[in-house]
Amino acid sequence: MWGTECNERLRRLCRSGLFSCLPEETEVHTVGLGTSILLITPSPALDHTPPVYSSIYLSSCRSSDSPDSFPSDQKMKMYSDIGKVAKKLLTDDYIFTNKIKVASKTQDGCSYTVTGVQNPKDDAIAAEVSTKLKARGATVTGKLQTGAKDPIIEAKYETKDSDGRNYTVAGDFSRNLAKSHVEFISGPLGIKIGADVLASHITGSAAVAISSSQYSGFAVAGAETQYNIADKEVSKLNYALSFFDGRESECTLHVLDQAKSGMISYSHHVRPGFSVGAQVLYVRESAATSLCVGSAYRLDGATTVKGKLDSAGTLSLSYIQNVRPNTTLIMSSKFNTTNFDSAKFGFSLALE
Image (tube, rainbow, N blue to C red; front, side):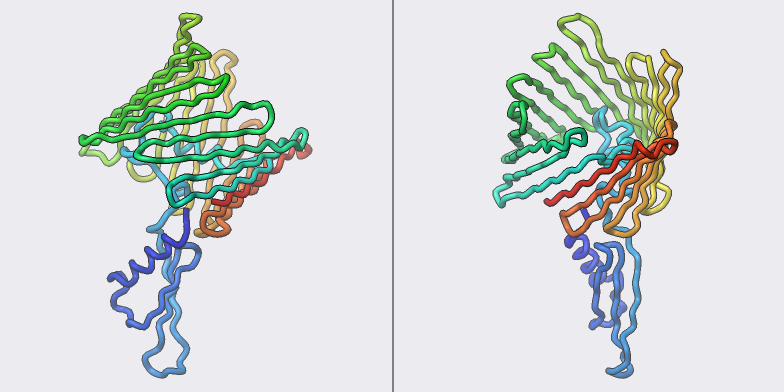
């Protein structure tokens, strides 16, 4: 997230040699939470001469969830990461209910989060209190929820060996929930195997990144399956293939529901702060096709606007504002362009 750390990096960058030709008394100020630098240089002629002002735009510090973010072969390791850029662009930050989240973290690594979400149907507020503790690669999370929902315990342990291979063991447990999975990442290969004890399901997924020294981009191929032990049948089978040019665009093909439907998604980083994406879904049984296009545009270092339009005529808009470091405000709305009475609005405030 944009903040004081990014600004401090820019100040050090100015002093380290990028603008070393400037006078020593030049003042360095950051504007827009790290996107630009204001240089105030006193005139050497007379003391009363007004200072010279100049601004320089830099994009070296970028938010991890900004429109500038694109994957690399070091990030796309699991099947769930395939096509993730377009998915985040078209789904993230669209909130059509009222939500408040407050998070804090202690010096010993223990974090606490309180979340409240208002149900638009009956205006009831569902609250959740969670705590997370990290120690020596292990993460344990406990959740308490209002209503009839049972407390949930989430546990995860991550480690890496001397050869760079990553191992993860995780589980979610409650009175009516018992899920666990293991993940293994080694070089370009990522494997995940999970089990749902109560639902008698076994799931598995694998993804492999294919790259070449002759080409800056890479491809990722993967598959996901789910086997129902009680029914003795495969209940899910999906395939995916993604191409990333290594610079600005990604194209992904998904074959879903045992080839009963297919989806193509595309994302393109047009220029710093501006990205577009599209998704086409085809269902073979009904021969129905749906289309969704969207974009994200960063107005400045603290403000981003997003919009998307689908083939059903639904227009969704979102305004994301980093009010201050670790404080994010999101306001969203959606409506059908043929029926404005169906409009929905949402508000989200996150304090961390």
